[in-house]
Length: 217
Image (cartoon, rainbow, N blue to C red; front, side, top):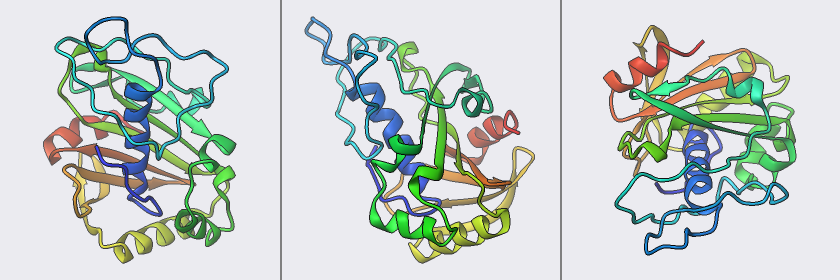
């Protein structure tokens, strides 16, 4: 998956790219002919940047589990434990870890909310690659701590439209969502707002997204 700028709903692309980078780029190669990831990195290693490119992984078997950054267990618990019939892996980043990856455009978007990247925390859940699943759907929550809910919604939706994302309001999986696809994206984003957070699902179609959204708060 390509890494994209993320000042608005496109932030989910950055979040998902960060997760995939963590899965495929945060550990040393296994001592074999396969090029998939091997052992987990030491606990003292910094979490991977969400803007880090995702290396290609060429392997014929299921991928081993990877130690992912986990800085907000409570936020992770909100997300589904299963996606596409497969147990999920989860990750979360917050504060300084997230701030290290923020670009100037994203910082400007947050400034409209009176916030900075250090006020951001996100969590992501996706099908465990160790199962060999081909499902590329994911669920996440992006929280701007203390942001005014109405202002958060306005700023993010306006920025999304300004960036060329076509949004459509509709009901999917029992949720009233804003659904759209940015230029170059293969999957759709289904996002909705709750308090100071944006919750989202990325999936290939409404049917796939519906099953995931139904399991979200």
